[in-house]
Image (cartoon, rainbow, N blue to C red; front, side):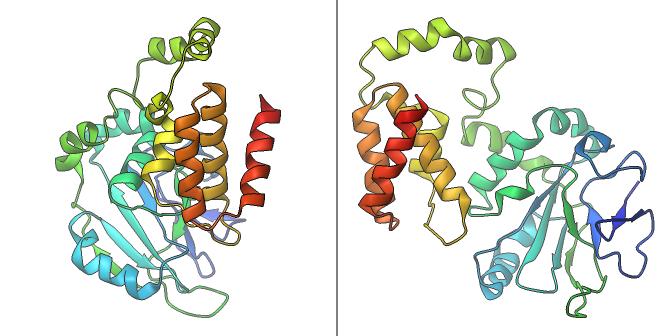
Length: 263
């Protein structure tokens, strides 16, 4: 069931004032929780810190070949939706957030990380944005433009089989006290670059923007990982990258102190 909402009420019809649509189909209109999702095949990407002109350029030159739909929000962004066919429902349901992260890293770099849940609200096509009266115009509509054909390229390209999409047994091994202790006792000079938090931070551009918690959260996670494994070389790389992205020495000292206290 496709569900529309004004953030308070829900309906299976796009009524006046219902300017949002739940990204994936729900089982019913009782709630908008992720647990009530019937399907998990749609993924939403939105840019808060990119000009509308640049987003339109990306839509015309690249995203039009990947998206099933793109809707103007009625303000400063475009809501891009990528979709797998229903035959991949079980796969998407199991790995939803990891797939979103993979797609963001590969295609939609810099997208708003708050969009990575299956019941996320997106702007309803052709509805009116109540705060300014602008139409949420459909800029692209290709209902059968599934991304299935890129699945085989997506997994090996980002090495998800070896890291993000590990078996439950491998994850438990990573979390075990014995494994953690053995890592801490060894000299892992430079090894932390292979760990998710550090790898993500070093390979992704995180400009320090006012009100942006993404750069600070990934920086803090990377510093914590380096300190945990006593990897000074990787820590230096992380801090040098942060300096290039306009973090001050005072701010970095505070990040390192907070990370040390957390240990």
